[in-house]
Image (tube, rainbow, N blue to C red; front, top):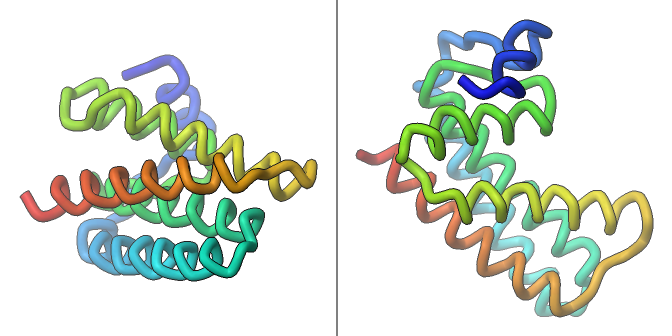
Length: 142
């Protein structure tokens, strides 16, 4: 376990969630829907909102992976820490996808809190969100 994941567990920001496995497919469906909406929003030229939607697609993909372990997050930071420990640390997910999730969180925060976004970062994030969802689906269906 990483130090961050351990701290999240101790603080109750990651908790056991007995219904997790049953709800993982629903989270993947939410991730797919967010991704589809983000594609449409990007095509309409609203790069800020598409950036936010793309992050939430990745968030729901990551949450599905946590649910698969019968865990639930109560912090975006702790969700990333848990994915690092449970999937990247175990060799089930490449580190570049964890980096992509962190980048998506940062871009979403920039868009939401500081009114900073760009078409270029939105297009990059779209590819990352597609890759992240694909990997999450692979892990859930294996």
